Image 1 (cartoon, rainbow, N blue to C red):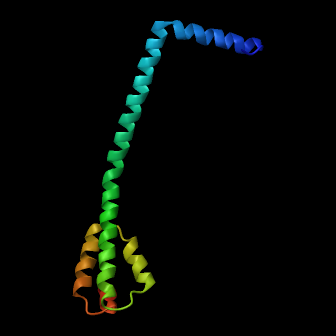
Image 2 (image 1 turned 90 degrees about the vertical axis):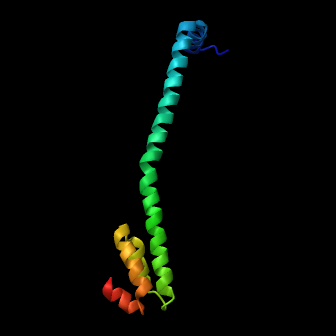
Length: 113
């Protein structure tokens, strides 16, 4: 044990608190509360993030499909790829997907989008 008076005093207080059953029960209750609150917040965050992440993944997949269809018509310019990838509205992407499926050329697709 240290010779420092302050450390000895802190040590005696900690030992006293460890022997006090009511205080121990209070700490256990507080620890349980903190644990359950952390779980609740984590679940809430997961639920909050799940929908936007799913929508973002769906939009990304549609964008990839548009580019894949256009690639069958020729070389897709990087600027067009970036434009398609940047779009997040599913209704717009769905319209572009149909347009890409019907287009005879990349230029036709670009002119109608």
